[in-house]
Image (tube, rainbow, N blue to C red; front, side):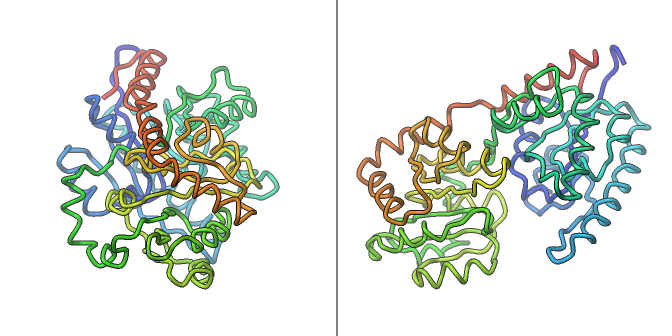
Length: 385
């Protein structure tokens, strides 16, 4: 392939606006002068306009998760992969390609045999699922065949990178690309959204927001955080949960009837509520490697606005929130400990806020993406387009 040009094809099996890591990679590639082709499972009007303004070729092959039928998801995943493989083979007739693939679910759909037909970069966001399940075993088999052949492997945090290097006997540790979003709203952009979300703003009033944003699921148990926050002065503080409706919302509302729930809002609009927060909650269970070594983009989203954070005591948060001093970790099993930790943050707010900004500025992902493409060019001997 020496002296040839490879066109980057950015592929993921989710809706573009729901994957901040993909949005960020795309944005950095464009700012570095590349014009990747995007293959996605969905896109909203906002990002359609962004892609069209950048003259980025993009293809939407729909895929929707069926929460009640895992077998149907597996079948649909194979169908999605078949359609993407056909599309990529067609695109490749116009020039050589470098596949930049994000997410284990995407790797599974494409198959190892197909991925290995092309030079590829793997952006591995999640740790593997349990090898005791069929999906976990399938994912492990796929990764075993494509990670050692990848030009660059990417992980969002240090521990995941080390685990993958060990598991798959990689010659090099994956490059660490933190989940830092590029679509942080400016003050002018926030003001432009004010009318759109005025009703929620009025419900909040002058109260300080204790915010959780993200998936409302059992692996992110908020029960004791809600209990602790409900004991704060109701005239001064309000708990806000931002995420898709699940049965847990009803449970949390029964604990704190004053709690405000806001349904899922796509990027970048949801950051309107992020910047309203006074304290941001981050919590994950410790019953899997994936959650133990979490790498949430919300840490950087809170950090962008100088919002102190409170999280539970797991490795992925102790060595981010705790290490950088941008908040505190606590015992999620103790309501009193959570409440004491919240009060500690309140009493030292300006210092935590300053360190939260510092955490946001601690990494430059544009430089990391530039490093990745330079490695790819060196290893392939090709220029990238």
